[in-house]
Image (cartoon, rainbow, N blue to C red; front, side, top):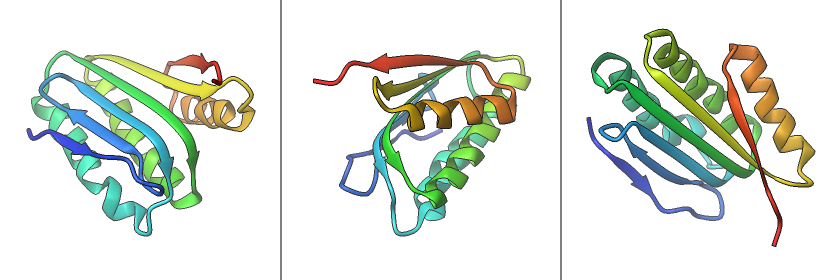
Length: 127
């Protein structure tokens, strides 16, 4: 299983995916021109982890913004995380949001409710 590290840009989030460590971090803004292509390797890596990975997986999400097409891809990411959870592995999902960003908090709640996943909601104080 290979690591994926992508530096953030104005339209893509930081991606730090280390399946050997059981870690996925997405942070920043997500509005790439082709969301499906951008998230494809992450989704493939999660599929591999379901079959070959360790016993624990931690996923950290800290979005400032994501567009509609990214939202669909994130749903696909959470579907894979749900499979990791169902396979008996220890799954931790941390959803970070800025203290006044109710929309981002609610987006996390929606994903949690839709897939029956437990999220840890972590409020970030603004600078």
